[in-house]
Image (cartoon, rainbow, N blue to C red; front, side, top):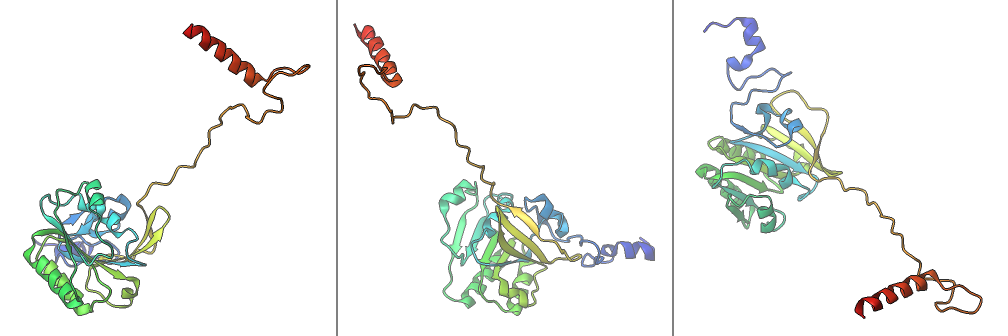
Length: 258
């Protein structure tokens, strides 16, 4: 098929899938999985999380909602395949897993004793390609190790996400998709640091929690118990309305039982 020069310039992906115009999002050569957030999908090549590639989250601190961000995608993974958590910052909460309707994915919790074992475990999981997702929390990892894991991930169809501290942004990374996550009202504020396409200058708000409805107090009409008059009738003073109503109820009750 002969293509004109102008056509190739307009569609460089026809030359090779790894090529794209700097002003446009790349046409992902790998399968993708919707993030579950339409405005985020529109900002990602392939309209979702790439499978079989390293995705990097840099976090202001661990446990700010990174799993909640991935939750819609996790529910779309192939049933029966496991989801592996390597060195999560907190003990996985099984009841939450059940509440998220993820019981059709076996949950594996791996807690290696040292960084070298962490990298080895991740590499083996990706090589075997039996897990639907691999989520890893690492405090420090060399750029060469990220490149190696990304290369191994390309041989799989695993959703592979590296969680790293914000300081990791000072290093280069082979991950084709890098995002910065900071806490925000009702969820997260997400900045796309690196993607195959133009720079994304505006952060994206991601709502993970519903806003709390304002409390509306209901007006209750009740008779005050602090009565200025005596509960009993006194000469020259009327009987309290509370006593009158109670007396009427007592007489009615007496007639009922008689």
